[in-house]
Length: 505
Image (tube, rainbow, N blue to C red; front, side, top):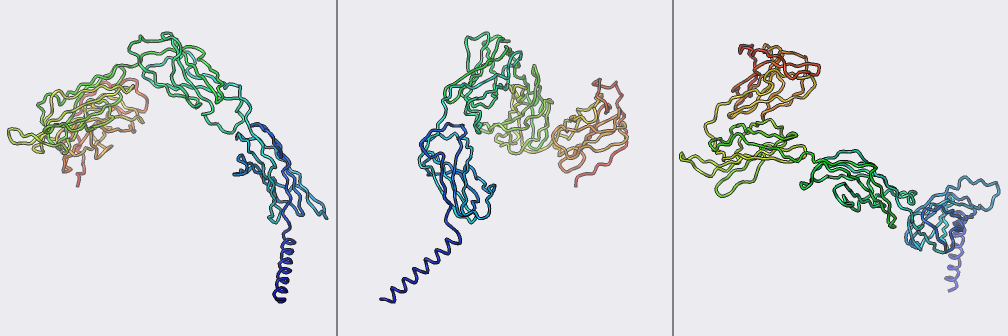
């Protein structure tokens, strides 16, 4: 028993010596005291408050970290790290004293359970901690100042069109909250209103918008009104989260005119009689006319077929093409043939639709009056090609982008496009393996007044099937043309130096 007691005393003495050595090696933690804020008090959002911290230690302090909590210490966020290396101490100093302060801008975090914490670290990494003895409160100053707002556009003198989108622009700020780091547009709510000479009071364009500074406004067309309508004004109202508001109105009036309210007029010219018989795999030309009081911007061509008891859905032949009046369509093999004619051949009835758009995206459309007959593959029409443009007299400027157009019939594969600058004596290729019925070409030099375009068409086996050239010469120039056509130049004789065209393997 005595031996066990003696062993316990020895172990206790050894542990005490070890602890003494550790304390001697690493020292005790720093002494830290948060002096301000350290009592119940109220701080205002946005004010600058000076935090005071006292630290003392037997060795030098490396840094002091300040933290803030709005939930009584459940979570903390770093405010600042204070560098204490600027302090100087003489030789023989036995204790180091630090009186630190930090000017803190009180954040926009309203709470009655706020605390400040200070962590002090010595040069060996030991840490001392202190927290405010009492919670304090952060609250906002009562906001009685309304936002400022100014209408930028439209602000007077403008002429706007119906069925057109315009950007209303304004400027709005909340002076009381100008110090805040957040620039969220939701801090201010915007209403946009309008008034004019023909309506009583103000009407809303849009309510409860964020303060983005702009809004895209599509002006509707009112068929019951007589245009132009004068005396228009825009009013912008701005309000903050505390109900303070202000407004501004256009300095002058603007006018709204009707603009373009007429859709294009479209007519399918071919096929249209009901006597046309086309076959799957053939290339056929669809012809139409489309006009508009302002201008046609693009054209869509669609088809559907009737096979038995139903029409198929509409499918696109071409989409967003220029209003050239013609398009070469290779008839697809997905058309279901249901009926049989007197000779026993299968066929389907097909409807062609042409849709034309103007700049206001108004649509005019037309379909063939009588259904087109589509039959299975069989005897095809001869392959023929004809140059449409340039066909004589045009003057093209180097660097401009132009359209070379042609019409091809029959079952053809593709075309090659050739240019001559010397009336047909020599030729150079500018486009190969092209389909459709047009080619976009950026005009290149050298200039010439004796240019021709020739188009060579190939059959499905890659053999030359037909060719055609411009009827008369056209010009290529460096300068911007003043006239749209050259003087009449006689058509060149058909005899010309033959060109060698590599046939497709």
